[in-house]
Length: 245
Image (cartoon, rainbow, N blue to C red; front, side, top):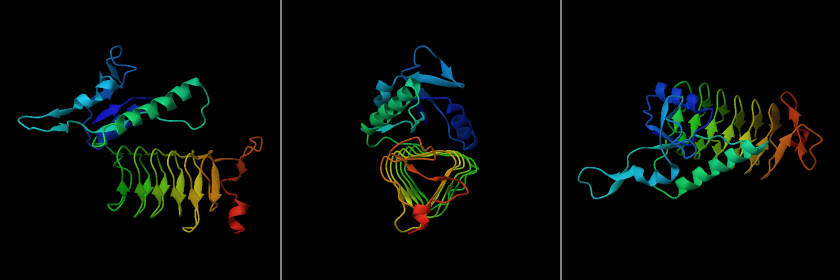
């Protein structure tokens, strides 16, 4: 497997790969190639523009095959707090777009051996599932989604592409769109009927939402000073709009 891009979490993923017996070939990252030999002991082997070179003819074969699988090793931050965050977000989008140029490219799921993932769970490529996470039967997860430590994904829940469930986040009874983020310790409990989390949603840390739909582009926060945002409660409280239905 090759990491495409890098960030501070790469040492975590590298150790999970070691425990899961996933051989790591190196890192492809134009920001570091030529001026850094390795990151966290992993060799930096090439620039991103050379990605296509990793599809080769082997032996006497007349067709080319990919000689590695790939994992986008950058994070994204929905808060867009500063210039560094903005550059990191833009880099991740660029790397995903690069992969889209190669529809047949193999994407690797990194699953910690200490996670519980039943056989019938459907996983797209390029996902990370951390230690202590439990994904219940019938769940479906798209591509490039990160589910960190001790998260719970309820049965039959569908999560889209490029989402993040941060540490101890929980979702059940609802589907989740693309590029949405459930922060540290937050919970979404749906009713398996008209509950959902849309696309480009940001749920702040330590919040519990009980059933109400969260629309595309919505930020869920307890900070009342953020105008034009819906207010909900911290864990232990209830979203009164949802329970009044």
